Image (tube, rainbow, N blue to C red; front, top):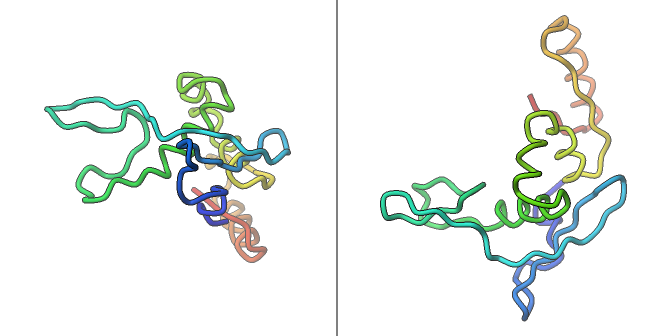
Length: 129
């Protein structure tokens, strides 16, 4: 899956909106967000409050903040999104991909874990560790 495919338009519409396609509860839907994101000031430098590009990059990438804003909109607020991050990473992957998600605790047999990873990769699945 390519990140660009989540955006129906690469540029904001005339009214400043981005349409981001996310999958919630098995249904793909467009979430409309604007490009106003929370900003904080640290040592006189302005930076996006939540997800953002690395500080040393010359160009600030906006797409991560737009996707995060759309997901926060699904959950209600940024705070609600932050509450699910610890236990809900698999749900976030499901929202971004629309694909079924499996988790495997790393405290189990490591050899079995590697066999599962190998099989998933051979089937073309996305794998994160």
